[in-house]
Image 1 (cartoon, protein in one colour):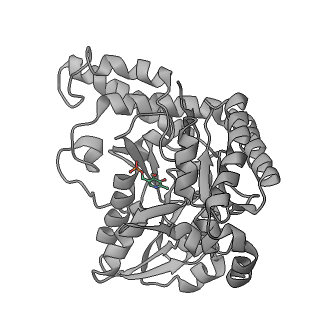
Image 2 (cartoon, helix red, strand yellow):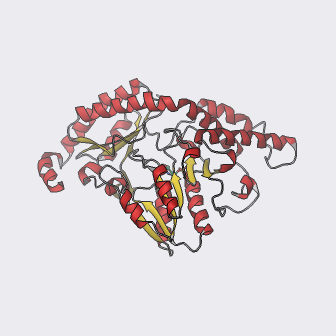
Length: 394
Ligand code: PLP
């Protein structure tokens, strides 16, 4: 039985068209793109084509893009490359709700001589811009903020922020791993210096990412080695995956409208029905400024993990807002930063859709989930005391 896959912010199905485009690069066309012979050279041409397709999706120039192994590598590259380019600057600004790919790196930098500012968000997950601008200084090397949050889908005004950051002479990086393919991006019309993306979030395979580097941006390579990527990232190219990412970018550009209409309508149908039918349920994050495919819903007084296990019986895949650390279920740092009450954060589920989802799948979740929550609440020691618990939480 096919899963009802509503976990597309974790990873996506590789599009059949992408698989088809990639296959010959595992078998027939195995040449090294750096080779002098035409057998390799033709592979190089295909990489060039993929780079142009990705550039088109971003409104960028092809030579502003380097291929990496994943979103995490792109984030690390952007931040390290900037810090090494401006060794005299020792201040980094980021937010409290970044993905671990940025969060863990800047925390490491904080333990190793850098001063880090974590910009807070409000209860809807919106960035405190005044706090951010007040903390920019001549010592700020880089500001790194995600374009869209992976848990709530909340979008940050990164284009507006990039312009302000430039006025203080700092570099601006955005982790756009969740935004690319879901919202229109035009790098020709903004001042963002560096932008990370990841193939497996947009129907390309895992193990391929890219970093946009605006022409003229100071860049000290992270991976030193061969002359690949015009000396900006050593290592023989992951040819098949690059070809796949190119095709996925082409599909994403063609499907952007669908993402923002049909997929968004399916997301809204799911969200509205669940909030309407299940008491003590609310949406986490700014409903007016979100990715079209994402909803994070808090079902108070139940454990997210239990919900996921029961949904799994119907082959429904989603994610919870908790992280299993040291044996205890801690609400995610994103929901904690948004001050979501413990009883709600614990029962938060993220549903993230894609163009492959159907109305029938959404209706299945709408049918199956309310009785699941009811059953779990009957077993919950907190449900009977919810009025008391609410008083404590408020
Ligand atoms: N940044 C964000 C916002 C993400 O959601 C993810 C993956 O979930 C990453 C970075 C890391 O991407 P990758 O898995 O390709 O390393």
